[in-house]
Length: 410
Ligand code: G3I
Image 1 (tube, rainbow, N blue to C red):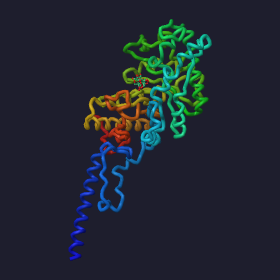
Image 2: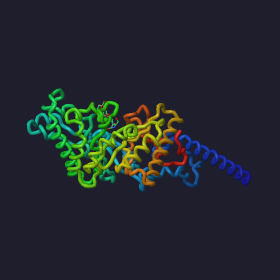
Image 3: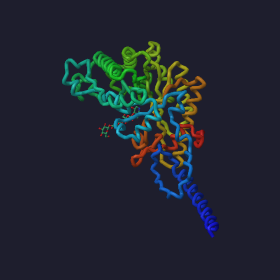
Image 4: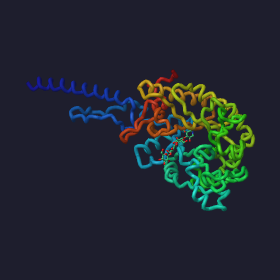
């Protein structure tokens, strides 16, 4: 009788284990967008009789690896961060483990650093010596230092996010524009103060500067393709770039790289190289930053690899500085295509680096998770953030070269 009951019990136990393992497999499917260990998919606590004796192996070994490890012999992996992440360990844990380069998304742009009231109140002393303040990045610089994350500084000179009052006699929005000579002095002062203060307060932390951003736009440019709708161009003239790089070289510590940064480089490679020629001849530039705001319909070969190869051949270092890959609609199919595009991009760039065709030392993703992206409607990043959890998208697996993501472009 007892033996009969025992037999029934073992059949029952086998059934329980089969059901338990089947539901574990299903759980794996549900977690297509595997999280950082904090996935939002609900888990049901099994009863003690269902708990298998040995721990379930990790479903994908890639989950335990990180981007910066995968590319440690090739280039840094960067992320652009807005202010406001430091209190959330779910974000900082992932940032610390995955990335070894960091850019401030907005906090080191001129409109975040310049102080209008103090500039105006300090006249005439501040006429060519504008007042700056870098306090807002203090805690992030400490975070970067404590976690061995190098900082790429974006950006000293840009036509956008630079206040119009910076170009006027009395630092007022509607004031009369200053002369070229005065603006050159303000440019020199701004670059000197920022670069000197950064080095004084955070020695060795910044490894490169975007000195000038987006100054070339053949669509609305002058005969040489220099963007005309820029107060720098208007007040100083097309050679403001040369002065900016000259001052940056003068004050930046040795070994800190100076970059020109732009979008759609593949559409203006010739103009960029032409404009940078005198700066390069003077020894005042090290690299070209290719932003990389693309979509799944762009060809990696044409939009990213070809200009990177050309810039390298012309003697520049290269970085992809603001990578995000947009999709028109968030469907499973598009998310998979996006993952494939990330995989192909990282693969091609790494191969080209190893073949000596692209001299690249960092790829920066322009933001951490989709809903905080400037292109949030196109879900372009590697993570989603939902209900307080950071979730790895298929795009993260693509960037990680997970074999489950096809390495082809459709
Ligand atoms: O700070 C204000 C805040 O006080 C206000 O409540 C809020 C309301 O909209 O706006 C906040 O400012 C926004 C700022 O981002 C900070 O979130 C601006 O409106 C918004 O225009 C600004 O957008 C930034 C954009 O540059 C401005 O040009 C994006 O975050 C930033 O990702 C983007 O970055 C640029 C790169 O620097 C250069 N390459 C292109 C790239 C994408 O545009």
